[in-house]
Image 1 (tube, rainbow, N blue to C red):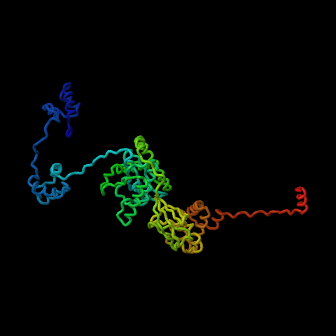
Image 2 (cartoon, rainbow, N blue to C red):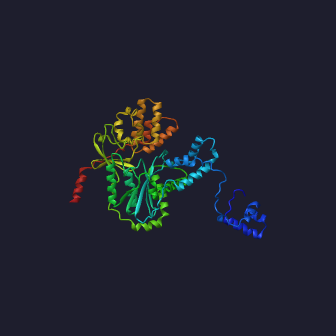
Length: 492
């Protein structure tokens, strides 16, 4: 067959068949032509025993230009591709260089690079000993297409890996690579596996090695964290991600495993962030089962944990503005109006924040984003009830509504009612929701919206907050004084 390469094994097999059959029959059994079989019989040596061809089938078209033009270009810029060099030669010598000479030029450049070209990168596989090294890294997971309650989740995944056994721990990270996410993820990993390796290795994470104004503070915090756990901090050279090969390869396997699990699940939407994190832990637990034996070998070599965890939050002091909100890390949060003008200590965790007035916690909520303020309508409602008209053009109005049904209701009220009536009705609905019936009221509002009607505040109040029945008349009997005298006589 044309183009079929015959090696030593095929030639030996043909010669064995030739001893038993005719030339044509043996060729048919081998799937080759009779002409090829005739040529094999004329040769005594096997294909591997024949010398390489030393003659050229045609004249080298680059012979006249190789030393004078092509070599100087390659020595000046070794990264030049053969196609670029060919185009340059065709531009300078259009009548002497044909387009079909590319393969010839590629071979010549390949041979030159092998003999005289620049040194190439060599990778040195490392031998990992149990308990010596743990690695941390982040990877962008937006390509997984995860949605939370229908909204696309833009996020990263923090991953910690033991170099020897491959045991891993993964957490969801909202936002960028921060010291808080690194501290939280690292400590959760160490306490989950029940020990501490000798070394913690990262690439040039902005959390640990920040070149901006907060460089000294972040570096000090990271060094203090490693000191608390007895870790030796190390980092790879800038831009050399292959030096963290023990974790870089596992970032790909992690995302492939999550993607496959999501395909089996059939959909990529989760009700909340906690459900998504639980899903990741389930997948990672299954992956850790594959390295259970090696982790059991490494576990005795891990150092003991400290008595308690280090702080896994960043603390900032903020002041509550006259708008009843404060700003931290470019995100806006509401608090009760009583705190206007006061300073709060805010603890910033990976996925939530806590605000303290003195030693009293006054706020615990999920972290917001610059585009999505975190406004609790219960904080604003006492003042908004006295000024309902302020709702119409309030800059944080869209973040006030607790559920989608409330947002849709407001849009309909704004279109069909006057500004005054729309604001009063919406504030009344929020007051009704604050009476511990937020979810139930949302269901009623959705039914009203589906029917194309407007909500009747009084009917909803009567349905969700019916009046308490008045107590029945109580008859009080007045006893005669002689009855008390009889009781006293019995007591005496």
